[in-house]
Image (cartoon, rainbow, N blue to C red):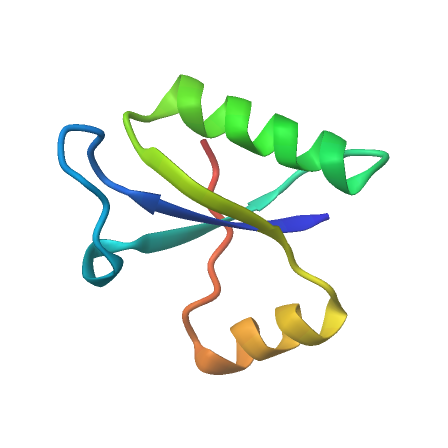
Amino acid sequence: MIYKVFYQETKNRSPRRETTKSLYLEIDAQTELEGRIKARKLVEEKTAYNIEHIQLLDDKSLAYEKETGVFNLTEL
């Protein structure tokens, strides 16, 4: 499953939409919830990012992300 993680680079400032960034993770999980939990844990352990939202990408959303040219799987 591919998850899109929306985050702020630092936890020291209040989140602002203009500074929200995203990364894409491939997570091996049985359910969407399990995948979200694994994604959050991975990002929290490997970075100092402030996670805003984690979204499971369905086939249409994944195709759109690939079309826009911003899709790149992140390895942490």
